[in-house]
Image (cartoon, rainbow, N blue to C red):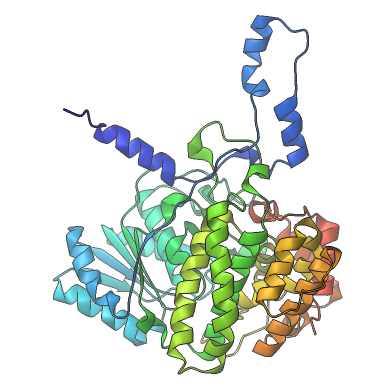
Length: 484
């Protein structure tokens, strides 16, 4: 008879695999890391050696982990969600959506399925597009009051991220929002409890949030975008139903698609996982964003090619169903890639741009507040970032440029950053992306406050292949005032 592991052992292992990083070494520089790894205590006694063993044994990261949600893909797959919830034996389901999706097919498909399976549910329709700490707290308070035993998110990244936060703080009833927010803006505590089942039903083709453990929001009093990142936040199931993306306006298709593009580029060009920092003392503390790795590279590379082929057609023609369906898959592919590999400077800069936007309101977004869509704010600095990082991995930068249509036949590796930057400018221009951050109302006098808003984003900035400080970020922003 084969001995089986105990339920406790299995639970502990799953929690270990599913948790996030609070690892202080995540931001360590490679030079310090190697010094630590090779440091020797010459002439010390055996007793002294044992006393210093943990320091002497510090070593660079040597492993990476792949974690993602289960995904179900297919036109009409949303009709099964009622059975999914019934199979969980859930009695009180809370459905999160935003005021726009509340009027459209995706929410109707979900609620009709729940009704068919005789599942009790309540719909929260007040998700804020580009959520803030205040909107997160409002959703958290509603969830705590309702006390659900399962959660469904129907919407784009804002809805899925809001549902993740509500899930977390329904389980941690006494915790404060900043307890789990990424350091240094928050305390960055790890999640060590099992959360409620969460099913994500994306209605955009961009964030990949159905596959990741991140929840992003605007921290208003710090004029910064930040978030919570932990594998435990991942939905248990993502239902990728192309029918749910049919209602996207053109500009939503554009912005969400650009997010996919940058997820793929940044994950593919991130610092290798072996150079991120020292290996954690416990695998529980290995970060979700680990740096580029051989498996993330496959997903990100494929997503990049799908975006290059399909995003222009999807934006140009609302009836190009094939292109739109390809983008729904590309979003998930990139989500798996960056959800484990990470993002870096484009996203880091975008958090400051979005956080300090006071007046710009992007067309076709029905909101009551100024809004620079996430994908637009990420892509807007992509040419300048490519110029900055190109020298660190010229072959990959040239590969990306070629995918975007550049002729690299006789290209010099020294020119890789500039070549990719030009390819990105052409790609963005052809899609009608606004001309640099000046289009959002920013001027040269705003560079310093933008830099100060971006610098705390160390969780992502440290994954860039070339390290950056205030001077380098200021240069990227200055070069991004105008792109064309």
